[in-house]
Image (cartoon, rainbow, N blue to C red; front, side, top):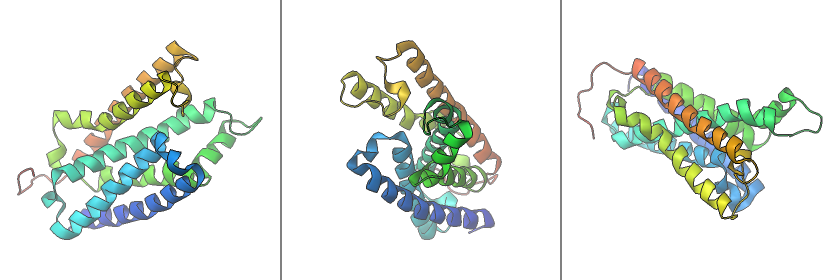
Amino acid sequence: MNKNEKIALLLNIVLVCLGIVGTLIAFSTYGIGLFVYYTVDSNILCLVSSILYVIFLFIKKKQQDMPLWVMITRFMATVCLMVTFIVVVAYLAPVEVWIPGGGYFANLKILLFQDDMLYQHLLCPVISFISFGFFEGDRRLNKKKTIWLGTLATLIYGTILIVLNVLNVVNGPYPFFRISENPVGNISVMAAVIVLSYSISRFILLLNQKHSPRLLKNKDK
């Protein structure tokens, strides 16, 4: 392993540990209903992708030798986590009332530092972004269709939750899924989230490629 791969390995081991802790705390709070939350699903995806990354890096010894789908999974997880982080900071903190009479920073303190949110809203998104953007560079990801894969998980989740809200199976869990309350406004927010996801995909992939080795000996797997 080169230096970047060793750092990426260490960061992904940290992600595995933090992901397990965050998921266990979330499960103790929400039970089986935790899967309705994009935040939780994104962190579980990150946990799985980091476990796979660690396993295959130990087996293959070189990142360029691991299956391409593992790197795509890391890409998708990182994009979803950054969507989570930005939505929390730019939308949930100023819009939702978390403390009666509390302002933006009081809300942000809860959303970024309390219980499972410390892991799922802050630590895992930041660490995954650093690891994938700066130390997991892989030239095999430099394809036009790869960018759309970063948005795929968000599109699937959003579609399912919209249908469940329309059928009154669930309420929310985020304000913009409550279509009947404010159709135009909430649809606009959802559209903005998709655009955000695509923009993050482009940015994180460009960052990844900037820190990728110039040559790969092996073909795509």
